[in-house]
Image (cartoon, rainbow, N blue to C red; front, side, top):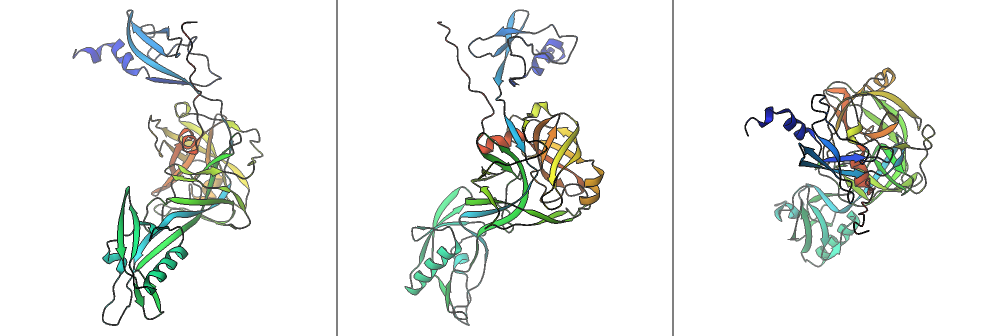
Length: 404
């Protein structure tokens, strides 16, 4: 058995995929063969044994079944590529604790009731005295009411995956005559990013390509609701080695709304648009290119550098790292376009979510910049963003009735 790794057919066995994904434009597995790239052993394995109930391929050597490849047919998905600059506002689920402060109840002693009750930075206050908390105003009302009655506030607190109860009594700040609990809190966050794709059939979209985290706690923001709006790029701070650049943009949450945000995950923000999104260059959309189709070499990204003008720039896929499990850093992308390098220095903050196009297919989105090399960064494969958006990429398997 120790000699098996040296046996060429055994090496071929190892290289045979456990799953083969085919699009509707590809040949059916019944008429195709699955081979590795070794010419010497091209005839060692047969892919002719197809289970008619599943289309799975069984590989043989010398008439002995050795391995099965699960064949999955992909949906013919077309997406409108993004690249548009967007503003986002997230309303947190609960009220996020971002710091502690002392309450001057008297001159002799200053305390932070929240810190004394072991409420920590990053905790989320979900409820106060049984009432849901989704804004700082709601928290202030409960604190004032409890302080006036000299009663404690009973909080339901979330810390990571754990929830627990905490009780504290508000202290009176005599300087301003208000009851306080010694906690700095936040109930919303806003920023800019880039639209990645729009799926006309469902009205769903994906943007940013990475999670939105709180600026103080660095933890992902759990959202109650959110809004995505059009934005206008006003200037660019060029990136340099060790200092990432940044897009500057303006937007109005009241006047420029284009959709809702229902999910903030490691792969970006997701939701539905109020109306169809347009892209004049790709008005009919583009097919999806899955991770195994991505290749090292030239590609394009779409993004906005000025106003709302959508532009296409040259990049190179330096490496592709397809995985069976979701990853946010699935490929390395290098900016090669002279104009983009001149204006931005490469990838800048606010460019996250810019769609990546290769061979007429949308294959992913820009997610992170290399701080020590702003010309390069990571990209996420489009299939993981589609999954997060709730768009199924696989056709439903229909089992044939063998009795018929």
